[in-house]
Image (cartoon, rainbow, N blue to C red):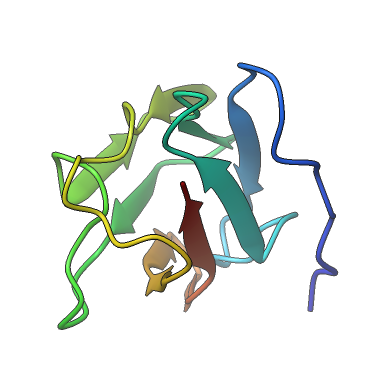
Length: 107
């Protein structure tokens, strides 16, 4: 299991998450700030699907993101209606497995 990297919630930089073909990621919990306009960018060497399909829905405009092989996809900023301090579970679906990390939105 990957360990959580603690990244300060400052600046305008995107949060990067690298997905493996078994669904594992290098950052199990990503913290982003609405006010700073943070986004999550997912990278993968193999094709991966990022799906916010829990009852909590997606904190972003889209609920599903398709990462092409050797590519990346960004979430866009959080929706205005995304709840602060709430964890949003999502699934990373790789060719060889699935993992369920978390995005936490901060004000």
